[in-house]
Structure formats: C-alpha cells, structure tokens
Amino acid sequence: MQIFGVWCGIAYLVLIFSGWALVAGFVPPMPPTTGADEVAQLFVDDALRIRTGMVLVMFSALALIPFVAVTAQMIARIEGSAGVLTYTFLIGGVGNMVLSFYPAVWWLTAAYRADRAPELIHLVNDLSWLQFIGGVTMYFGMPLTIMVASLCDKSPDPVFPRWCGYTMGWVVLVTVPDQLLFFFQTGPFAWNGVLGLWVPAVMFGVFFISTVVVVRRALLRERQSLLAATRAASAAPPATVRR
Image (cartoon, rainbow, N blue to C red; front, side, top):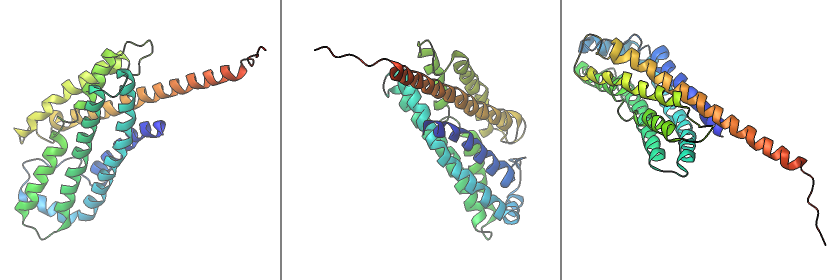
C-alpha cells in the first residue's frame, strides 16, 4: 500500500497535466486579455473536450490523497510521531487537492451551459485560471515541510537527503514570483507568461518527481532491512532450553 501511495504521485502528475493540457487543450493558455465573446465561444466549440479533460483533473485530486498520506507517514517517522511537520504536510496536501479540484469544477461549469452570458463565462474562466495557476500558497506547505524535515533528520540514512531539502527550498523560491500574475495581464508574469506559468509548472513537476524518488527509495530500503532481519532470525539456531 505504501508503494502504491508513492506511485500515486506520478499518477497525479499524469492526470492533471494530461487532462488540463492535452485533453482540454488549455496549452498554450488563452491570454488574460482575451475578450468575453472569444472565451465564451471557446467553451461552446470545445465543450466536450473541456469537460473530459476536467473530469481527468478531478480524478487527479483523488490520486493525490494516497501520495500525501504515505509521505506524511514518512515525515511522522522523522518526528517520532505525528507532529507539527506531519500535519503541516497533510494540510498542505489538502490545500493542493482543493487547488486541483475546484478550478476543474468551475471550468466544467463554464462548459455546462452554452447559453450563458459571455460575461459570466469570462468571469468563471478568470476565477479558474487565477486559482489553478496562482493559488500556490497552500501548496507551499508540502515542499517547505520536506525542506525542514530534511534538515531536522539526523539519522545516518535519512528519508529526505539534504539535496532533497535544498531542492524543495528552490522549488518554493523560484515559484514565488508566480503570485505577480494577479497584477499583470501581459508579459512574463501573466498567467500565460514564463514566470507566471511555465517556470512554476516545471517546479511543480520537480517537487513531485523528487519526492516520489526519495520516498520510494526509503521504503525499498526499509523493506530490504526487514527481509534481512527476517532471514537472519530464520537462520539462527533454535535456543536450547536448560532443565
């Protein structure tokens, strides 16, 4: 079950990016300056495609749950029991699940009725993009927790190596400028810009892939230790009982 939970991190990435980018066709993104009539026409012309892609994105929120659970379990082992870091990671994971699920629902809502006023579809589309791309502050709880956990783990064979902690720090630092997308409709900080979308999207993938690699490695290492201990116990001669 733990290995399954780890691979759910990759399943999450596949579902969210394939549903959002490939199936729904939101890549390249429509610019924030796109007019209401043009946005509304897109949701009329590609209604089935958008609905299908957003359903996949909603399933990605489901795939995220086991991944967050198993990673939080590993953090709890570092703390000795479920402590502040464990719950911070869990709540950050819930926040990321919300950020994945609700924009998809709103895009589905925009595509559900073709007879809505273009201004309403335009509003819902803005709401979806701004949260889906810009709502990263809750998500930051996950990489920041792993960064702190990697620095706190003094064991000889830590779950999260130091390189992983430093990587998580860079993931957050490089993604922070994404928050400027709320102030710009054109340029690199807009939701279709390099710093508004593409760099944060790459860092998002780096976080999940790095975490999957290190947690899977830790679980396999733990399994090998348990198997070695079991073999040693089986090979040991039976204890003699003195009368």
